[in-house]
Length: 135
Image 1 (cartoon, rainbow, N blue to C red):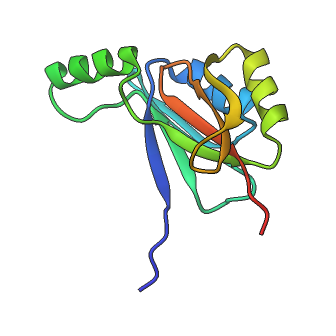
Image 2 (cartoon, rainbow, N blue to C red):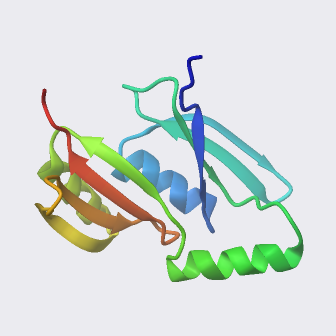
């Protein structure tokens, strides 16, 4: 059996702002952008990983109360985000900082051996970015 990741979902409160961040600050390619009745489904991904997509969406399943709960968690930054690898952590960090992302942790060596940083996207999702290891 061969199992591989196809896509992951990131809940956002403002799809246009999220699109700008993931496209312009992180440099991801936009693969699709579908809007319908106030909801939006945007897929982005790295050129180096054409089979993996990140879905940015303001769509939620469930009742209006579920949507309100999710929006409150999103506003607090309580939802998990994404972990990225880069070949140049310092340049990536400076690009994201210049864009105006909220900085959670500047690049540094972690006890587990990685050198990484942490930022929040415009919706408050935590993103960790580490320096790719060679070998």
